[in-house]
Length: 176
Ligand SMILES: Nc1nc2c(c(=O)[nH]1)N[C@H]1C(S)=C(S)[C@@H](COP(=O)(O)O)O[C@H]1N2
Ligand SMILES: [Mo]
Image (cartoon, rainbow, N blue to C red; front, side):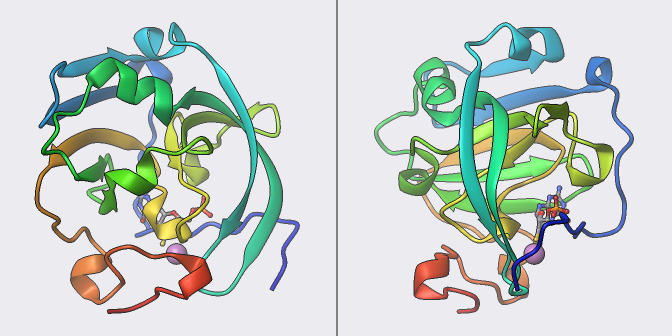
């Protein structure tokens, strides 16, 4: 199904975060652990990108225009150690999802604060969510709060409930 509207899908508990209440902490196998406030985040180089969304429940939305901070820039700041191979993305609603670093480290991945030139709404994960267009959308954590870099893979919320550890839509990696 192709959709013009953007459906909302989550665990049902949508955190009500003002930008001033949002922080992002990053730890694990990196040389430079950080904790960014909203102001720290907005002081990073800004990045624009256009990409498609593919949900595992069979809808897609093409040509979304995002703005935020690129994963490439983020990685240049935190500097993953050589052993780092997976990220665990954790969110304010208790959600978590695991992503291989090789998928996260891509030109179209970002920490998005805007969609179609408007701040990302609360229900879509504002003030900041991950956009990882090459994997199924359950990997794109909304209300992102914490990231841990790991050498071993581990399951997030849906992965522990049978979703695929990678989630490549072109391979239809839905379940293990
Ligand atoms: N924090 C958080 N992020 C999440 C989820 C969630 O429940 N909590 N659901 C995931 C799933 S299964 C999908 S399909 C997309 C939906 O994003 P949308 O509601 O903006 O369409 O968010 C993903 N990111
Ligand atoms: Mo989903």
